[in-house]
Length: 326
Image 1 (cartoon, one colour):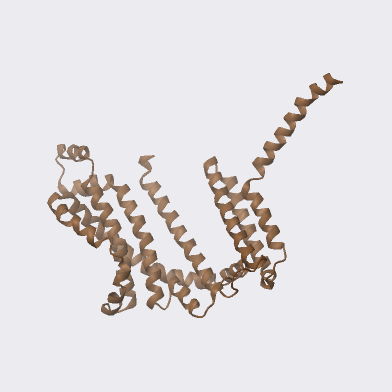
Image 2: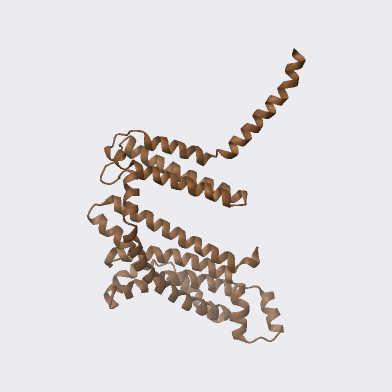
């Protein structure tokens, strides 16, 4: 009898272990948090409006879970899958936290902190208006940011290439660069003829300094071996700057361009909140004046999504341009 038990025990243990490994692979932390979030969304809370907008919250949770599962199926690398699971887990935790302190426990003021389901409903309802505001904002952002790119990069290349000029300009960048461009808004609005021109100028200033400083330092500190090799071939100055040094300092330029883009978007939103009649910043300010905080929160979330999308787009461009580094 004892012999029979000992012979069967490894078989049972191995089977249990296989089932456990399969279950862990199929049911990740994100999946568990999704189930808990659904239970919480269906649980009756203290706020009556939580029940009214429950369907929108459940729809959001299902959308996030579907996006996570799709990402998990399509991604081939394990690191990407884990990253997607971590992001989904953080989102589920945030939604659960907001649901607990609003709908379930009713710890916060109703006007300032609406239930998550109501914010989701308003977000969906306002998507056409968000699209119009985004188009208005991107027109200003594109003009100011493009102007900064086409002026800062060539100027920094020329100054960084000449040591004497670099020695004169570099101290000025340490004084002018750190000044918050937002302080120029009052003067820009008064001096320039339209709010659109003032906004483009502020965005230009905000983007110019990060791009200029990074490109300037990259040019000045370019590898000496690269310069010596080019001089042996007797290349002219224009070829040296734009065909040899410029590709060599692309990492510095892209780093500055990314910082400049983030600053530009912050300044754009701030400028729109002061004197615009359209745009994402105007949207948030307009509805905050009417104490319509579901729309305010929906606008803030949409701005966050837009900034994330733009940043991801820049990361793709960086990978494409700097593929030689991998």
